[in-house]
Length: 251
Ligand code: MG
Image (cartoon, rainbow, N blue to C red; front, side, top):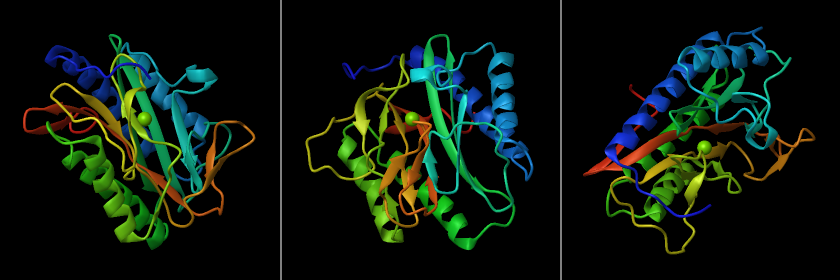
């Protein structure tokens, strides 16, 4: 993954512009994700948003990925490919979106339930976001990556959810995926001590049942082996004096 770099305030400002586009994509796509909408239509909305801003996509073409967002439904965890499939009432929808502004990347994911949905699905979505927020709250100068991981793990385990382990958060900046990795569980290993300018994408993926996952025949879509629901939340953040600032939320 290469060296761990620290970004200047000017560089973080560019990442925040990319992050604002990611947030706008999420707002537009979530609003359009009504029963009967096709996942390809949602991707088109995201693509138009990126073009309108004069930004570029970090997802499309990434190892051959065909779309600007990932749409993962119900038991799909991450990396679902938009296409003919339609959004259904009650679906648990996970959207992962990214954008590049002037060479700087942002990456963020949201999960939501369409319409009423089940209480179980809604709780999974809420707790996964809570785990993300706990991880972000642990991110500050002098803290370690392991502390972020532990904060996420504690929220997930307290709720009785599975933690998907093969996919983890990451550094972000000039590339979408930079060092270090940010696991959603304690590793027990020595980890980076954070300093101002470190930028991370923190992204817990939690499941209602077994945390075991596999990859579908399309070689992208990651699903739970037992078919249980999964949720995914992600924000890109920068470490600043006294804490962190979220680059993909609240622009
Ligand atoms: Mg990511």
